[in-house]
Image (cartoon, rainbow, N blue to C red; front, top):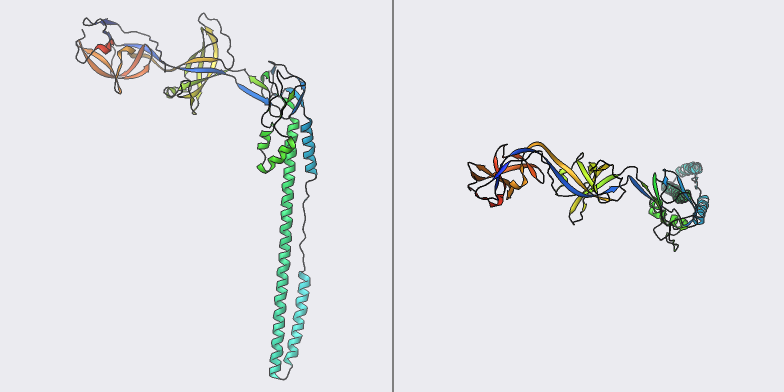
Length: 437
């Protein structure tokens, strides 16, 4: 932290007769400003990189480098026979997807009921005939034979009904499995068509945001342009969709700025659109100071590219995710507004460009008309801040509680009152009980 103080009043002091380097002064009041300095850079409102949706060539280029465009503005048209062929194949696969299979179960309930009724009547007749046999032993034997025959028939009938039920259930399961597979094939074909349609529609490249255009080359190798589309598909379908859209790799490369007729590679960046309508500032505040920074804190900003000019800023938010500072420590990104800058003579300073480096001086604490002493009066003894309080010409170590800490003066929250005499210069030459006239 670099602390800078702005004093509204100073303390009046005199040098000790015992040592010309020891100065005693009365505690006064001042306005003290504590400042945290942090490296920063200007940030555009938005930046979007447009990549080629498929391999091909630039058929029509409707913008030039540095041109300002509106969101949705047609930038270029890409000719990609590969993407058109992929759409054609996907539509053919969709048309040939299997249709739904229907199944009508086998119903023999009526026939089985008639057979059971006829058998029951036959067994009744047989039992009547058996009962008519005059010999008891023969009659009993005949009735037993009828009972066994009827039991065998009943078991066979039940087995037949069970077998038929299993056949119907199995056929239904097969039909369900076939329909499930057909549905999956149809879904796969539909998704592949939608992906291919989106790629073809993307051949008419439009500006994603409003801003200034910076044309790329369109060449080079990169991952598939439709990766964002493929990622939205189930993993089991990505392979087929990729085969329809073509492989991401390509040996095509170009140099120079993109123009009509330039070859482009699937996924390669075509251009960048940067919205400079509003600039903000992003500062990197050290972890030792970030807890002093909160929304609304004001700051003065100086850009390396605009020496002598000061820009005003105000803290919008502090990111809770740390980064590594330029010194290798931990820092936190702090976002600030960026207002118009002026020179010391009142002239309006030029508007910075995105990415320009600066130093932000954040006024984290301001104490107005506060009890204050020069920073040189305070020394640290362990964990305690102290001053040499002079009473009756004798110096005594005295604990104080500090508030805002400026470069020249510091606020004293407790331990001193206005008019108290303290050593303000040469504190390192004073010891307890020393006579300080």
